[in-house]
Image 1 (tube, helix red, strand yellow):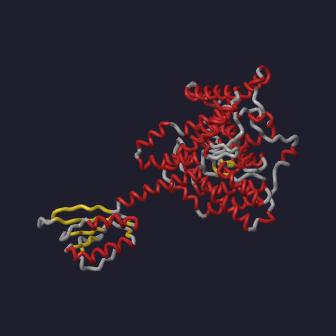
Image 2 (image 1 turned 90 degrees about the horizontal axis):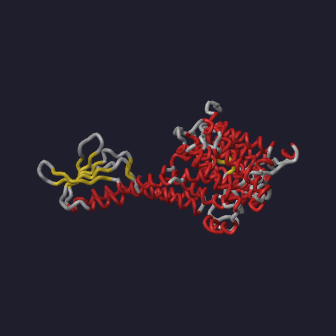
Image 3 (image 1 turned 180 degrees about the vertical axis):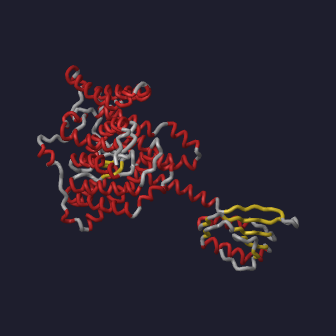
Length: 521
């Protein structure tokens, strides 16, 4: 259900998300090899349909850059966009089933260091990818998050290459826009409610349109060309508008190719959604926890609808979600508003939207990127220790040099290595104490859970026990002991007499048991 209690915050935030979402929807559709209007359809569905079902208050759904390569290959392999839409519908059905099977809980197994690294990595990518647009070099499509770009450049070479195509008009618009956004956020937003309701990004967009009109009339050498502006498909009639929707071709829905592609889309889209859901909850100023299984159901319904009307596959998207949060959104009314605005404006004023300079939107996204990757976050993670900082920084670097899911996978691998290292080191505690007779007695206390990973560490501890010593192996607090460790201790027990070691065991509920009794670890 939608709540209108926070409309003063949610409506302005919805406007900002709408302005950010439109070029992203178009850019991702272009990169996917799909009709441009397919991206707009998904933006509308993500706002109007998914937000009504979702339990996430701040998440915003739409076409995702992470799926662009999969979609491009899928359309090529399946032979037509219409057949691909049947795979999107089937993927939504699979996601809906996953939601009912409670598969959404997998998102809770990603450590905070990796999630924060994902957010900061996205922030860094936004900054790096939007700088060319701020300088007026718009060859690369909006929404691209991959290191290697379709134009043959990569994220860093593009920054050098853009210097050959600088547009002074775009630079003027982006610099003025950045100045307004910073001043609005740091000063004006604290001066009165009017400045909180009318958001800086909206002012920046209006100003960008105005400046470009001024350039066209008085300084034509500074005027931005069409390739520097938002480029929405414009229908010349109502029938032309509805003619942009595409119906799916279900004739091959039970073929291996379609089912395999649907499964691939469902798994990748679900994983990206769950990661973004977790990240969005981390950014939520009210620290609400979104139901992951309900989100899978919402995404499933959204993708089923998208497949039926000609849209691209959906996920929850961190760029739009973070823009929503940074703009003051409080409930899912903001996401719903952005979807309604896309629908209304595409029908009524697509020509006005096509006057928005990409440089204005670049300025908005640059501020979003900075807030996601603030230097204070890096300092905080560094102070948390290497166990937190290393997975965090590796995730950022991997995301920048590959893509979102690959980067998260690499970050997770580093986090798991730390987990294994800690598990190896905390398997036991070995200490010595004096008996009442004055003899030195060693105590080997096993951890609550001892796995095969701890076998080598425990073996080294047993080798330290000197000949002729007394040893107590205490597993009274152990709930799980792996078979490999049991076997190791049994072998040590059978050979203890050769080193004249007197061995006893301590179990839960009893004091000590002599080494002559059978071990039942």
